[in-house]
Amino acid sequence: MAEKGTISIHTENIFPIIKKFLYSDHEIFLRELVSNAVDASQKLKRLAQLGEYKGEMGDLIVDVKVDKKKKTITISDRGIGMTEEEIKKYINQIAFSGATEFIEKYKDKGEDQQIIGHFGLGFYSAFMVAKKVEIHTLSHQEGAEPAIWIGKGDTEFEIKEGKKKDRGTDIILHIAEDSEEFLEEHRIQGILDKYSKFLPITIRFGEKEQQEEDGEDKDGKKKWKTVKKDNIINNTAPLWTKSPSDLTDDDYKEFYKELYPFAEEPLFWIHLNVDYPFNLTGILYFPKLKKEMEIQRNKIQLYSRQVFITDEVKDIVPDFLQLLHGVIDSPDIPLNVSRSYLQSDSNVKKINGYITKKVADKLGELFKKDRAAYESKWEDIGVFVKYGMISEDKFEEKAKEFTLVKNIDDKYFNIDEYKKQVEANQTNKDKNVVFLYTTDEDKQHGYIETAKKRSYDVLILDGPVDSHFINHVEQKYEGVTLKRVDSDVIDKLIDKDEKKESVLSDDEKTKVEEAYKKAVNDDKNTITVEPMATDDMPVTITLPEFIRRMKDMQAQGGGGPMMFGDFPMNLSIAVNANHAYTKKILAAETEEAQVEMAKQAYDWAMLSQGMLSGKRLTDFINRSVELASK
Image 1 (spheres, one colour):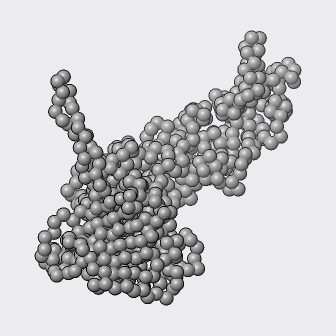
Image 2: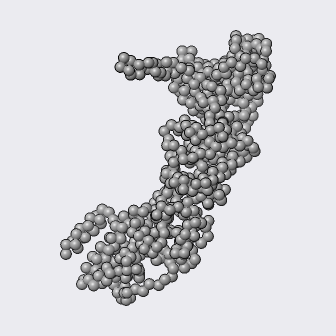
Image 3: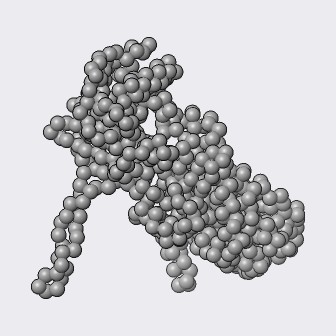
């Protein structure tokens, strides 16, 4: 057996193109070669199960070895191996028919394109880092002869008789100078940990040192010794490959720790398992989100037959579900895909819909089964559920029942329940039920207290998606409107068309208004003198609901229309015509004294809104001390 030849292809210079375009990251070569070794091992197991291979199986471990002196990386398996004819077929013909097709399809595309994995080019990823590759192989077939294939990254190859005694394949990579980083053990360890952590055949990468107990010393203290053990990379039977009925809660929690060693314990989880109309397994965990969103992304890991692909799953998993953690494994998703492929693939779309349904069903089940327990988790999952309501119509349909709002008394309701709870007392003259809400209980405390005096209920909506959730509720629930508790005087927030009589004459109103205009000294603000309850504040400062909402959206990263920067404040200043302090202003002997008193009341209102600072705050304090001293 000795043969030299040229690989027959139609496109010149294919190897440089493969090296440049095959994958976006050169480290993928190790994933591809280790995955091939695992496939060869699994094929042997399958043949043995079918009775087509009757020889000894032995240990099917896959070995990865680095030799820094020889500058080689070797991947060895004890799988089915190849004959000379199979080398010609699988290494020369199939791969390059696919390569030619790839070149024709992608030669005019940008560098960000990636080859689809099923073109059979996985083996040739070796040439991204190697100047020469050797295949030493012996087929499992009875009477087979060992063979060696040698390629140097061009179209020429050599096949000759081998000396391999054991069934299987050794791939030896002679590393190129520009890729010698891959001769560092920590680099290989990192790649194997990333891509091969859950492969179904044991992967060994040399040895590692481990501490073991070694009796006791003369003082009775434990002694330890250092021993060398096989450095096993992977867990060959990860939890998602097992039946949920065989697993306990502790099993799921332990696996979560394996995936995310430094994370808090998850709230609950969903075990995915479907084989029609597509194959999908996995476990999705609900982490404790609190009010954080962005830092949680890229936590779902995507696998194909236990081979890690990516943790960027935005085309496979709906946007709101990316806040979850866990693993999805589907052989129906190729190992290497362009984004355009994912977006158009019918299986991916089905998987997307299936996961959404499973998550909605799980949440609905938890809500019905133990509402108190569900409510106790709401602070952690509320962001996720509300985000799903806003962004995914299919989820929203089911989520109406278990999407909750909380009031200042820490009671929870879904929207329909809350509407029934408040409609008797909080329906305005236009027959709309008004939901009052606060975004900051401390800063808006005075306004909340005023609402409570009317026996009105106030919701807490201070989460990162609540400004968008508010708009969503108004769009989806007919006859419901939401108003922030400090966006107007209370009788205008829920306008029941109940007329209040003013104790002031028109002339007195004008005098009071003039005093406040001089005290405020800002034409952008609107000043009105209105009849209110005698126990309401002497002055109430509000920002119109629209502007409040836009500023809330901006603060929460939503931008709002025009992505405005410092949106003009345009305050509404409502003076309580019926308050005793207003009468005192009118009774003041001089216009200067009236303005000074109006300024004091205005600053009270500003202080209650947290809007008084710097020199104005100092002036207010000094003025208050002077008035107290008189």
